[in-house]
Amino acid sequence: MSFDAPINRLGTHSVKWDSMEAIYGVPAEGGIAMWVADMDFRPPACVQRALEGMLAHGVYGYYGDDTAYLDAIRWWMQTRHGWAVEREHIFTTHGLVNGTAMCVDAFTKPGDGIVLFTPIYHAFARVIKSAGRDVVECRLANVNGRYEMDFAAWDAQMTGSETMLILCSPHNPGGRVWTLDELQGVADFCGRHNMLLISDEIHHDLVMPGQKHTVMTALPGISERLVMMTATTKTFNIAGAHSGNVIIADAKLRARFAERMNAMGVSPNSFGIFMATAAYSPEGAAWVDELCAYLAENARVFNEGVNEIPGLKSMQLEATYLAWVDFSGTGMQPAEFIDRVQSQAKIAANHGTPFGAGGESYLRFNIATPRAVIMEAVKRLKMAFADLQ
Image 1 (cartoon, rainbow, N blue to C red):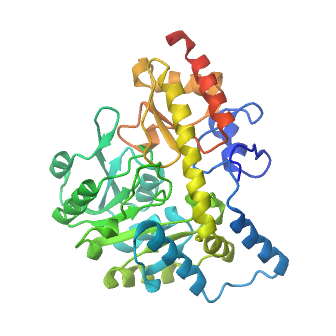
Image 2: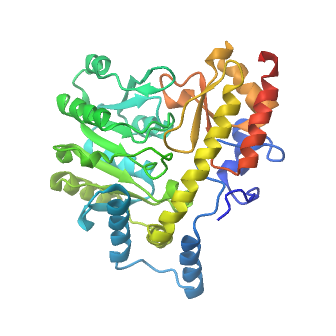
């Protein structure tokens, strides 16, 4: 697999490329899409073959006998993460935004407070607010350009109305791989305030070389208040399959979630199941290893180039393919640095404000694209802020 090969995604109903002009004012021709989190890479060949097999058969009926699918998930989690998962603990949702929404619906009630460590993936707050729950923003501490947890401050914020915490592990958009001590702190924090913990680990396969992700379920005594969320979609660039897994070890929590799944009539589509089964394989694992090495070099090229621009600072990535760039050192208001990025550099990047408190001076750049695109993006950013140099 050559991740350097350019793939023209214009006119393919790609939200990333075909919607960037409407959303960001960046023209499709000549613009660079570095916003929504999907990659400009084809998935591993095993996924393509699985779809080709479906097409060759030509009948697209209801999927039955999910043993191979569930066992592929179990094999992946055990082999890649040292996590033993039971088949009956796995629920399949229409992606993890849907999984988050299902958790909010199943385990909380209107008016409950749901804690987010901000800045954080923007869809969480959208789901919480739409469900009539309250977003409780606990702001991460930025210590020398690295996010750290501040439990003392957060303990003081709690009012007793909070019933759930949604954790992003690894962290999006900051790219942190939380340490075992930090995760234990999260577990203890939830225990002190009697909160259910939803651990969204969708980026857990996309860690930089030398980093090690710890699954939250590895911590002792947490299972009775823990819901795990994982997916193939980010790992293998198959987000269009809208498939994700909510994995619950605790029987009481599992029963409540199953009840809401049944009430909502949620069931997976066969395309997502075939793709996930194929991806969670030795061939898929080898592809992910190559991908992570490629992303690490992309991160190095992007960060080194961006950090040469006075006033800009890109966080050191430990995981994900999402660079989080702080523009506060320019002294500019968001409207000005956003205009320079979009109008002058012609780059579409996620605005930081929707990620919550602490994100206002940032933009998020998707670096999962051929390296030539990364180099061109850096060149354009340097030109757009040339007056600062």
